[in-house]
Amino acid sequence: MSFNAIEMQIALSRTQDAGKIQEQNQQKNLIQQDHAAHQVRKNQERKLKTVVSEEQKLPAHFYEKEGNADK
Image (cartoon, rainbow, N blue to C red; front, top):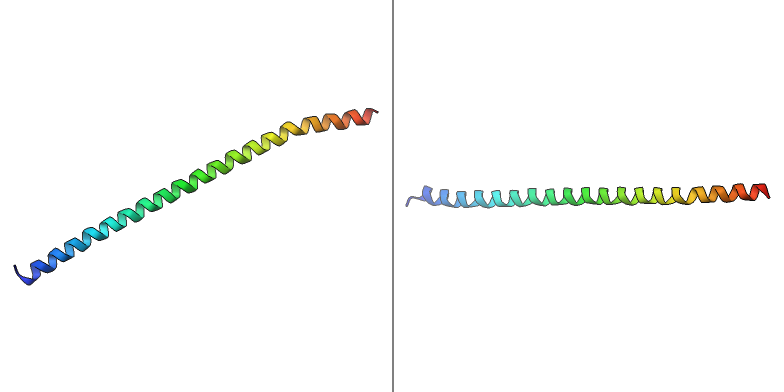
């Protein structure tokens, strides 16, 4: 083997390693984006339930005030 052939073997090995690292970073970013999207959906659902919950309480509160006004 010549000296150039050995250098090429090392270079190809490093290129494959770099490709694997790049793929892992892309996967990590996708997982982080998925997690962030899940958190946003979870917060939206929580806020939606909170609004519905408060709306259910308000009509009873208004009726109570109307009843006190008649007395």
